[in-house]
Length: 78
Image (spheres, rainbow, N blue to C red):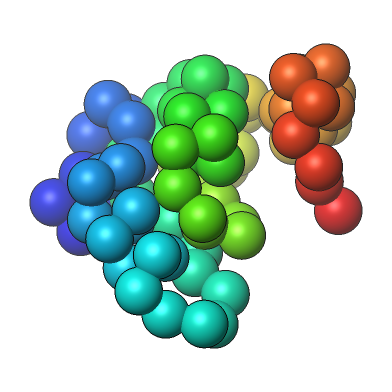
């Protein structure tokens, strides 16, 4: 929650700790502002999802563009 609304990136440290400690899906939330933030959270943690709101609502990053970018980075998406 500390990163929520900052657009400075997901809280990689706590997301990594939680996703490494549990055997359930973890969704990173709060802080996304660039496509690279999603890449970082999926490469540096075991999070299985990334949640963002304002960047999608205000068209900063169109969802199809993010999906294309992640595919180009060899990151599996649904």
